[in-house]
Image (cartoon, rainbow, N blue to C red):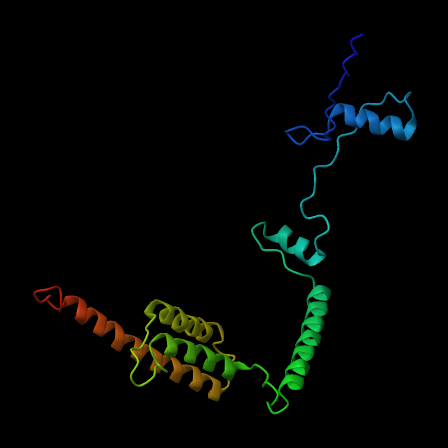
Amino acid sequence: MREKEPQFTVTDRRKFTAGGELRHEEGQEQREAESGPQANAAPAPAPPPNPDAGAPAAAQDASAEDPGAIPGPSREQAAQQHREYQASSDRLDELLRQSNPEAGAMQPMNFERLVQFLYMTAAMQMGAGAAPNEQPRVDILGARQSIDMLSILEEKTKGNLSENEKRLLGNALFDLRMSFLEITNAISSSAQRPRKPGGRR
């Protein structure tokens, strides 16, 4: 005797239609579960999904004022993250001290060290630090980006620097721009030089 083939019933259980409206069947099932099958009232329209639900209050306020604003963490979240970051950094310092007791503690980051870091990065990208008999490796586009970072730093910190900090940043930019001009002028001269037979300049 041939076995009866199983019958399948496909039911669409999605709560919302493609247009974002609450499906009628879904609303009917919810009402029956809440007040029994005898409820015949028309389904109340469901509120549209809120994409900002669960976001920090500060981020929701910012989004309400400017829809294009990037939501940020709340003050409490930022403070907690800062504490955890500091604790993690302290643990890292302790591990480094244990592995190398002779090394001194790392100096905390400040504005002078930030300028020096960007200055050295740009200088290395322009070939500084190469060995005497080694051909310098120049990353002129990377150097330009590093110099531009210092320029942005100068623009955004205007009126908020001490005289020493302003002088340090100004000197760093002056030196780096001079080196950049020397290299780019040399590149331009080399490009304009006529080629010799055999492809050499």
